[in-house]
Image 1: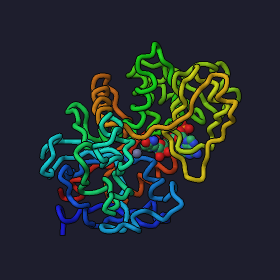
Image 2: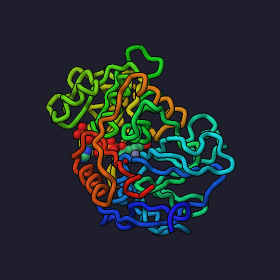
Image 3: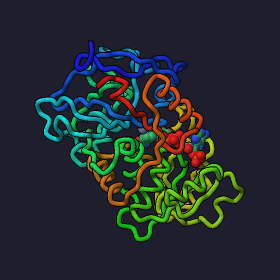
Image 4: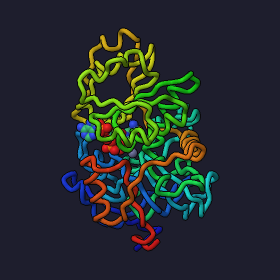
Length: 371
Ligand code: NDP
Ligand code: ZN
């Protein structure tokens, strides 16, 4: 059996096998009135997928193992670009044939105060694009697949100017950094932004901060990314492996955006004094569940700074981000890999080793799946 009864994707249900998902067929979720089916063209690889496949964010077994119906294995992938091939009877935001992007959120209640104020990513009933149970017990399946089913709200129109392999990383990584950068520096005169962790999210954060008019500091553990950061538009580069790296940076930043996937090299007691009065340290980086922030209360005291997080972004912000990329002509730095068991495995393994400059996009889906 094949589409529409069955999708095909690369799946695993054992964290030990995180680097080698196998091709499998599975039942999609029930088709909701505002759901659409996307025939996948390409899909980015985000570090969140490593955490999901390794079950690194949870003390419980992988969610798919207890799904009430549908697959007991997990397909990840949440930087999807593809074509709409089916729409539910109440869909108004897109039509069959449209090229759309889908990020890490696939559903929300659409009625609560958050959903009705461009904060649907914080809806209490939000469902992620992969590894997340719907109310009926189906665990969502992502975009390393022939097709993905999602609510129309989360399928964003894509500007024709940007080729799909560059659109893909904007759907999760790009949107995740755009939202807090915009919310923290909008309306400020000559804002300064520090970006920590120059990986998939971090490299897009540099370009987006520049496009939004900021002076940008790239903060990395060593010097290997210095030249690249400058090409991305960073005005300054700081290597935290260097002694006295924070010298002269007191009272300096309107925003420190942490994009690192681990807290092991994060010296918060040295970083927080670098913020201006009442400004924010925002961590979009989400480390393994065993890691914590290590910070002294006095580190907040002398500038009244704040620490927090940020989740994805809204539909409105996703559309705005893609427009910004067109207007300022920036594109994620992408390395493409042909989709297959070997291609997925290579992408996950190399991302785990930090061996990517700076985002993988899996391509060739039509060829592989015969769609
Ligand atoms: P990448 O692996 O591409 O980049 C992570 C960067 O973190 C590295 O390039 C590195 O930068 C830095 N880093 C610091 N310490 C370590 C360490 N011990 N091991 C490896 N890297 C380290 O990841 P992504 O950009 O795809 O994702 C970054 C984080 O953002 C992840 O935790 C991910 O789960 C999270 N995320 C959160 C979202 C949200 O909504 N909040 C959405 C999407 C992702 P350098 O070499 O410059 O130090
Ligand atoms: Zn992601």
